[in-house]
Length: 449
Image (cartoon, rainbow, N blue to C red; front, top):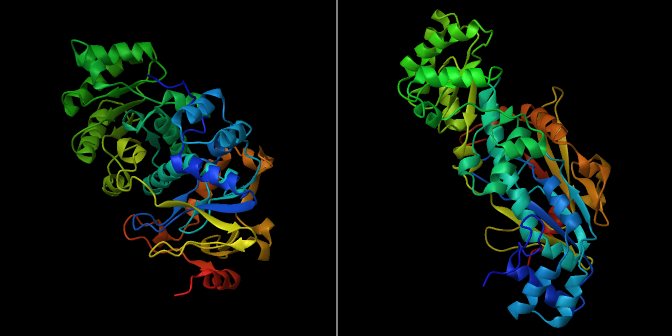
């Protein structure tokens, strides 16, 4: 029998069971004092830096978090929870404070991108979904930022929705990629929801549906006279480029320009050079060449270093799935409760106790030199990177930053990164220093051996 219909984006049941079983015990024993949890990333051999993303969707979820009739009925039917606990959850709302890195901020391992200050049950329940939201967009933004750095001045477009792991992921990926510096997205919902410029060309099926490539090109151009970008590798790139020249002369009689061609297969650099020569000789010097097909930052590095005449690239599956590192080692840990700092000290997974703040240092040229990670109460919080974006369960103006602001912030910080930290392979470690107070607290919270 099918269960109740639930709103995937809002339901609190999109969580792990242990969040609810822990909550029942917390409430049964009066463990409702203020707690501090922090969300951070552990070290990665594949990434020299991360880009904070997903905060807007996380805060939206927190503001609307509630157990409706369908959720409460599932809890009853599961047989796992007491009547008293179910009654408590009927009135559950998030009432806490959120301190966070503004979206688009570059950050590093062990630095909190999100800090929750709330009654223990509230701070605990939100763990799974909040991690789900912020982890994925941070994962994709961090991957996309690497593409943006490698591409230099070459425009990069998000083409990856069709192989993303679900519709929500595909739409969020378009947002994360745009934040990281991509120029546009082929995902219509990403454009509609987030105001990202839409772009697209045609598929091979469109060419195959016609009796000739020439007919396909001309029909498409006359139906989309302001956006003529033609896919030329359905059969043979050389012949495709020659047919573009042929159809362009007919279209010119009606003042319809061929803005670009796209190549999606083969040796992209060699095909781009050959196509450029054919287009130039045919009088189409202003027609741009776009390439796509299995691209990521590693292939982009090789392709663009080769000096191929490429005017834009479309990246898809490898970025929207972060294929070389499909997840980050994210963690959401309790760091303060009942007036005491707390931290995990298991082998290989020690984390830092206390409520923290990040301070960033720059040299005279505006390049990032290093960060100091210290305790919030012993520093001037107003000068730190973490900002209060939610209070009493309601967003503050600081939590309403636009996607355009996040995009600009990301570009500014990417260009301030030390060159070694930007490296695709074996990146240099960015200096993150613990304050003396935090070092002392870490020692004090270590278990006795």
